[in-house]
Amino acid sequence: MRVIVPPIKSQGIKTKLVPWIHALVPAVRGRWIEPFLGTGVVAFNSGFRKALLSDINPHVIRFYQKVKEREITPSSVRRFLETEGQQLREASEDGYAYFRLVKNRFNTSQNPLDFLFLSRTGFNGMMRFNRNGEWNIPFCQKPDRFNRSYITKIVNQVHDVACLIQPEWEFIVAPFEKVIPLATKDDIIYCDPPYLGRYVDYFSGWTDEDEKRLFDLLCKTPARFILSTWHHNDFRENLMIHKLWNKFNIVTRDHFYHSGGKIENRRAIVEALIFNFSANIRIHNYGVEPKPEQLVLFEERVEYITQQLSRADIV
Ligand SMILES: C[S@@+](CC[C@H](N)C(=O)[O-])C[C@H]1O[C@@H](n2cnc3c(N)ncnc32)[C@H](O)[C@@H]1O
Image (cartoon, rainbow, N blue to C red):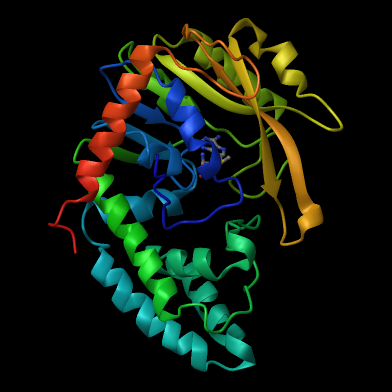
């Protein structure tokens, strides 16, 4: 499966886990509902024609809404990054003076293209906001960040997501409590909330009470759901699994996160998918062997994505 990588970056991005997650998705007729959208990588690879996508971070939602409305297009992104890239290259302090200018401009105007600029010039592809909701990631210190091939890569990513966003994909800025109750029995909800105790910032504080509220809502939903969380690492277990989630089905798998650029910051964690439907899983740990009909659906969705990507009407 070719995984579609979105133009927005974030430290919690699930790119590597996308095939694993999608192999588990059951046959449903309704919508893909994702209340913790983040970069959108899981939604963009879902192959669903209808979706309800939300996050409390207004910047990601606004960016994709503008792509949907064709206000942001591959060609407008190319023009923007070529102009801004030139300014960055020529700026004093090895580009830092211009990075600072865009950061201040974004913190005042919240322009979605400035958000894209910051997402792609921030240190290590991280996204974080301070307590005033302002961009809080330092410059990657590459004045030539927007060289020709990097711009083309980003433009292609914008093209891919523009092809995949459908008229029946709805983007909203909302807390998860507002969105989960909207699900019907025909929908599938995919939840990837912030992990307790990791990367706390303006939009990703997460407490035991949040987890409990999420649990209560998912217990009540008539929809199917899949929840991403962590199971254990070398030092501790996720106590919430025993406290709350154990009554549902759980599959696990190893994953490596990089926080910071250094190899020693690579942290092994065992990821878990918790779900409320039956799946004929033969390998409980380190993998999912989906039911034959799940595989057929998975292939259909992949084929649908491939068709969408070849659309020529998006420039
Ligand atoms: C772990 S990230 C999701 C990452 C995403 N799956 C990806 O691959 O990019 C969690 C997301 O939840 C959002 N979030 C945090 N608290 C929230 C809340 N109470 N309601 C809705 N979204 C929330 C954050 O803004 C963040 O984008």
